[in-house]
Length: 119
Image (cartoon, rainbow, N blue to C red; front, side):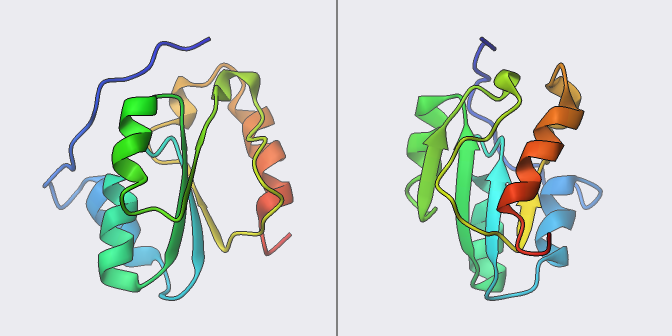
């Protein structure tokens, strides 16, 4: 099992994925934020795009903060290469700052396809 990250804060750099990703989301869609930590990217999406955002993370303290804004949160160990969440379809599945930490990101991406509305 992976050791949980500390609580993270939003990067203010205009070159950060934290700033770029919300600009790419179309409003009113459903978003799954994988490795969401405190929900900093999802919060920006909610504020700017009026989307529905759910999140996955291993850290229960971080998920508690994300849960203040997100519709649903799931505590999962992604080292198992499975999301294992409610059977739901998402328009966007975000993997910001997470895949490079996974032992088999290919398996995690393959598993995520069953939750994609565009499959």
